Image 1: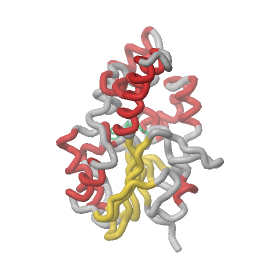
Image 2 (image 1 turned 90 degrees about the horizontal axis):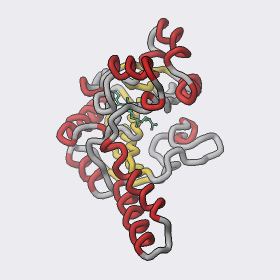
Image 3 (image 1 turned 135 degrees about the vertical axis):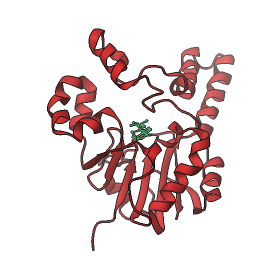
Image 4 (image 1 turned 180 degrees about the horizontal axis):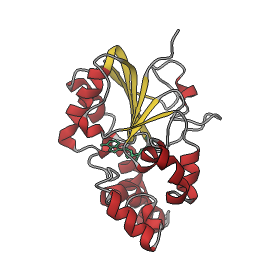
Length: 243
Ligand SMILES: C[S@@+](CC[C@H](N)C(=O)[O-])C[C@H]1O[C@@H](n2cnc3c(N)ncnc32)[C@H](O)[C@@H]1O
């Protein structure tokens, strides 16, 4: 049997050898051209270079605001992790409908997002604990950070740790965090996300565990867990629906 066609939208550095990995980010742009691959070690350094070198599989440079570059019903599964919250709220129904368009009937849409409910509950519990003197205010500060850092971030990941000319050049060429699609535009929970999926025509939307999926052999894609089975992004909400 042939390999299923699985898209990993907004992959960032988190690619899979079993997917077509799509993004418009710097590492994917670098990987998509011969010159990019040659100059990558000069442009990306430290943690970013390590992550770039660990990227696996096919990558495609594309701006997903222009749609998904695949024919109707041509894809078996679409996955995206920590991407949906970067899309403007009013553009979300159109994006989800576009995912439905490329999926074959019965194909799986798997979504991973930061879980608004879990972040809000953590915030309230650290607030209560700090007020009662049971926990230190620093833990409360950390929960506020988790909730709002990506709403207010100005400079993109990696760029802010650089200095001088490199930093100015990267910001001038690629733009700030908002322009690069790094800031959160909305957040989702276990009520709103299944509801949104069903409102654009997806069926059987439900919350699943990180290692559970309608996509056959999902753990082997190594996108939500590593080889030892450890979850990559604890605190996430995992939702699946069928086209
Ligand atoms: C927070 S990162 C998540 C990366 C990866 N999926 C993960 O879970 O680690 C969000 C990704 O979405 C990508 N993205 C946001 N808007 C995009 C767009 N319009 N077209 C393509 N990629 C986009 C960003 O470039 C970034 O790599």
